[in-house]
Image (cartoon, rainbow, N blue to C red):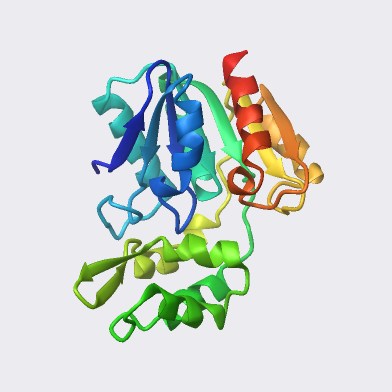
Length: 253
């Protein structure tokens, strides 16, 4: 599948993969800073943003999409960065196509299988009456019945757009993503990767625990861990300066 992407800057390619329910739009602020040093390519994964929809939302399919993009753009020695679900896509790319990559950055995502934990987000998404809502503020109120974290609400509301006058729609393929949740939460295969890799985690997040370090190091053998203090799962948005410094220190050394 041909993925939609945005591009900024010059130099060694840095490809950024967003997380579940996200899009390339979520990373524009960070991309502007990275573009001072790199050719930054912000990707919309399938069933997200402006990329096409498809019933196959497997990691194999998403990883193959990314490889197709790297080939189409003739990218070499790419630094691949992925957050959350995008981090698992990045790990799959590194495991199966390491020759395309120079370094790997995984943001707040481990290798393990995760228990279901998106139910309230899906309930909130389904609560938005797309045919009856006439403003984003109305959608905000409907989401608030299920989601009380302002940052999460605004993150989801970025997916709403006016399909036509008076008709809102989601840019993400909600039904396929919901049906694929088991796959999205599944573990990364136990396959060795020798690329220089950094796992950046939020101190307040439970996606990567200290007890997970040894398992990750068994398969990402040239890996290190960076913990961003007082940050949750959306490390790049919650602590942007600390996050940008961590990425640049890893990439530029």
